[in-house]
Image (cartoon, rainbow, N blue to C red; front, side, top):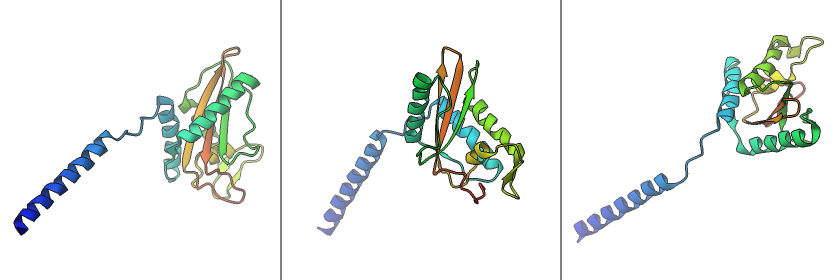
Length: 176
């Protein structure tokens, strides 16, 4: 009787295990990132690795928010810069390019040019230069990234925006 009970228990465990495996195989996988998302993320994470900062993760929520914003700017503001500081709980970078299309890597590379003016030891920027978009890219406390781009057909300009969560560029704190 004990042997029969063990056999029934073993069969029940095997059935449950098989059901879990089948359910895991049927559960929807995370959809792959778009080429643009992959490119934005790769460019950011290469810059972060260069200063030994953990990589960002892609956020569809932030990507959707930036997509809505760049479409609004395209449709209502002729692709002009958005006001990223007004009430947003995310950090943000943006790039406007006139008369050309730009890739996500080109966008991030443009922001990374500010590194030439950033002094990490003094956590300062060379006078008469900006460093904020660079420091946002490499901000160690930012964990998530979402970006989007829109093209204004009329003048062939493009606007690219990335949001970061949590935001960076906290006064008095070093980015890394």
